[in-house]
Length: 519
Image (cartoon, rainbow, N blue to C red; front, side, top):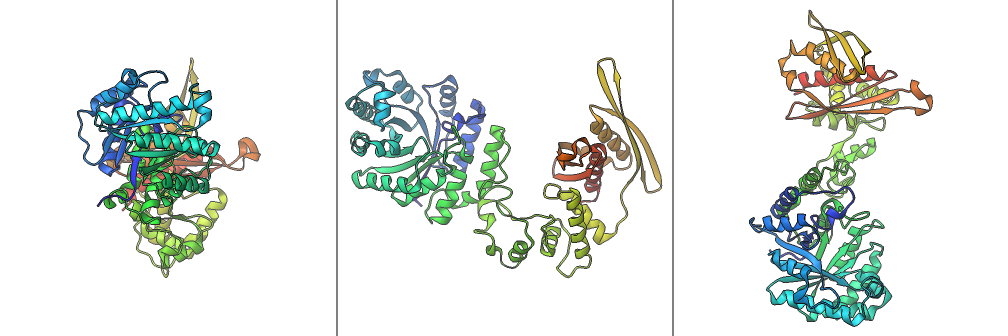
């Protein structure tokens, strides 16, 4: 079905202008293919007149066929005093070979006079000439009215004249841009309504998030008559970023009830968000609305009890609709319902009537008071529940350890010794490492693989240290969080102690035990 709202993705152009964002040509091609598979209507590939990387991207993109999306090249109107056919930047836009060309022009007289240093009349000619020239070459032309809202607030008559110049020249769409990101939703709605009343061409909206209203402003424009939203995956972009399409899309589909991307794509939203983060080498934001790990996480005991009975009592939508999942967190705020749901998630067959739940809850609250934290250490939590419910013997027992460090010339050498038992058999190993924790990890692993060869696949993927009660200085308690993986599954464990080595060993032992006992 034809969409009521088109989604125009500018991650590869506007998003790449964000601080810390550096995409290679290969990265851009991979993201473009993923955006196409997701069902974005437009993908803005870059500005072929601005840098060699974008020129190379478009050269390679010509050899690839998009199935659902239309590729757009981005650029500006012709330069002042230069015939459009002689403008090198405009020629490069045509050379990019895309079916769509998006150009921006000036709306705000401040920019016309002080930035371009030209006249209002010449600016109108620059807009009209460029749109007309590109249309004459068979392109779909989208006109981005840069500083559209600031320009309208400053001089409504001239702002409207620039938009009408693009319309008369044949622009397929006029996009109103809140380039500085400082407008409020009511301003966006009022000015979009004014434009809708004076133009016959379709309107789009391009917002930035400088005051935290990028998505809200885009939605305001849609309710006022716009039919296209421009934005970026995860809100990447200059300064504080652009309208976040990962939030805008489900708001359009589920809250405004308007058709946008294909319905089946909505369940891939979280996966798309994580994919682009991974390619961009950014850590995924756990607090991102809709798709973040905490978006449907419940911690308070009363909340969890209500969700257990009626999910929508504390969830605005089914998390599965956007590819997310409900999470129940365990902490000193937990109630019995938290334990039941979390235990069920971890594979235990329990109900509210299972004996031992109260003892588990009390033990968790005691440990949290000591500094333990189980939200990122579900493997340690699973072991705690297993020990309370199943009373199984441990797969191994650490009897003692010793860690030392010595200097050999300019090099420091850390050595760890560990003694453990598996049933009636004992093991005693020594290992060197880059630091005391690394040495201890190697010693523990070397001792255990003699009995459990499957542990060869287990590797430590992350190690975090948090100092608790910092006012006590170097004697403060330390919390260690460890992330481990066997190449298929990842799990987290925790240890807390006044001694960082002891805390690390607790987390390491839990990691190995979980690898052996998990179901």
